[in-house]
Structure formats: structure tokens, C-alpha cells
Amino acid sequence: MSAAFTRARRAAPPVLEVGLEFEEARHTLDPHLARHGRPTGIIALTNTATLGVLAACRDLGLGVPDSLSLVGFDDYAWMAASTPAITAVCQPVDVMGAAAWEQLRSMIARPDESAARLVLGCRLEVRQSTRPLDPPP
Image (cartoon, rainbow, N blue to C red; front, side):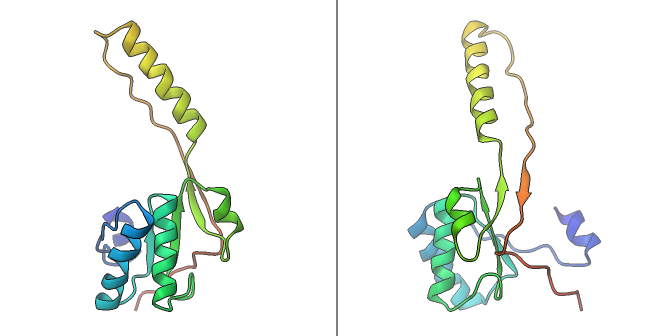
């Protein structure tokens, strides 16, 4: 990740863990934003955390994407239907579930064999909750 920021001539951002649930994300982010100001963007790792981030932004009068960009995970239907529509990392959930099931069956049938490593791709569904960064100074 740091190489991408170096190429873009930007400092690597600080990371704030706000949790995975609505209230946890909202109540962690509210005081952090009030004390430290707004970040350029936020990546929320669950759909409920995404909602918590939206609520914290609303509480502090921060518009998405005017004040900060927001990216969610798993591309739930509400993300496309919200205003603004939420940019999302789309994971192949069906393929992940099938692969996990096959892995489990294999481990039961052959407990002495090592587990297989499987890397699945994902895609970014860009919507209205993100905007380009301002040029570096």
C-alpha cells in the first residue's frame, strides 16, 4: 500500500479501526472526527460499519463525497439505492462460499492433506460516494 502512496506523492494515511457494527463505528468515528478533522476518505469493512460512517458524517455535517469519500464492502443492494450511491468493493461471495464448502469437504475426507490456498479476485464498483483526490501541493 505504501508504494501506491509514494507513487502518488502522498503520505500513507493513518488507520483508525472503528469496528464492524453500526453503533461501534458511529461512536468511535464521531469523537475522532471532532478531534482530528476529516480524512480524505474512509473504507468501511462491513455494510453496518458503512451505515455507521454515514451516520457519523451526518452527525458532524460532513457530506459524502463533498467532505470525504466513502467505500463500503460487499455491494449490498442498499448501497446502489442510497443517496449518494456507495462505491463498493465487490467480493465473489457465492464463489467464496462454494470454495469454503469444497475445502471443508476435502479436509474431512483427507484430514492429513494440507489445505489448499485459493485467491479470488474482487472488483471496485465506483459510484457517487467517492471523488478524485485534490492534486498534491
